[in-house]
Each structure stands twice: as structure tokens, then as C-alpha cells.
Amino acid sequence: MSDCIFCKIVNGEVPAEVVYNGPNVTAFRDINPQAPVHILIVPNRHIEHIRDWAAFDGDVLKEMFQAANEVAAMEGIAESGYRLMFNFGPDANLVVPHLHLHLLGGRPLGPMVARQE
Ligand code: AMP
Ligand code: ZN
Image 1: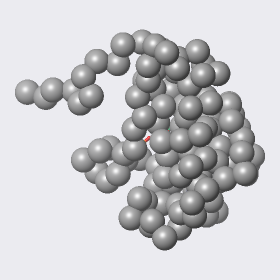
Image 2 (image 1 turned 120 degrees about the vertical axis):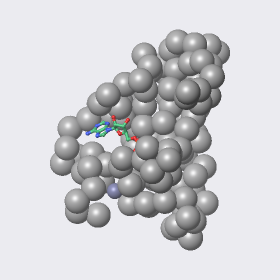
Image 3 (image 1 turned 60 degrees about the horizontal axis):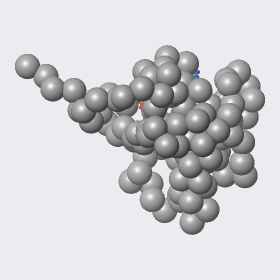
């Protein structure tokens, strides 16, 4: 997709700190990290939403989880722990409509969802 920032990162048109580069998946550091380790794991192909399940061939999801596992080990947080997270739609604050898995860690992350008054 020509207008998609994550497609541009995958294609090398926009710079990013890439930490994993595989046949179906790329992982790079989030530009606005919410934890000491904050990495985005994305399919190389533009898949917009989990509802586009037909766009996943078996290897894409498998490699996303493989990459998460490898990157967590490389970042030294495999044992201390980390959180994997997808956002979809406005209630989840989705900003970039190219499927991405957040990998967060490097400090205690607290409860999964912040309590709001
Ligand atoms: P989400 O709210 O799940 O759509 O998250 C999108 C994430 O992409 C945010 O955490 C942004 O900080 C991150 N992001 C946006 N543009 C870039 C970029 N050019 N390089 C790295 N991360 C980015
Ligand atoms: Zn894209």
C-alpha cells in the first residue's frame, strides 16, 4: 500500500531501527516507546486488520510469533517478561492500520488495562 508508513518502513523508504528482518515479517523499534523495550512486529505484506484473515497464509502468523520470541531473547527480556498486544479500532486507540504486534518490556508493566475514573 503506497500510503502506509509501515509498508514504507518494510520497503526501506522510511528509516527505522529494524531489529528483525525475515521473509514474511519485519520488526522495528517504536518511535515513541512506552517501555524500555517497545518493538513493533509487522507482516511485510499490507494486512490491515485481523478480520482480513484470508490474507494470512500459515507462515505470516507463525513468523510473527517466532520473531517475538527471538526479539525478546535478543533484547534480554525473555525471562523478566514482556507483553504482546494488538490494537484494533477506536476503543483500542489504533493509529496505524497495518497489522502490528506490540512487544513491550524491560520494566514491570503493571495491570493490563489502566483503570479510568
Ligand atoms: P497503534 O496505536 O497500535 O496503531 O500503534 C502505532 C504505533 O506505531 C505507535 O506506538 C507509534 O509510536 C508507532 N509509530 C508510528 N510511526 C512510526 C514510525 N515511523 N516508526 C516507528 N514507530 C512508529
Ligand atoms: Zn502497510
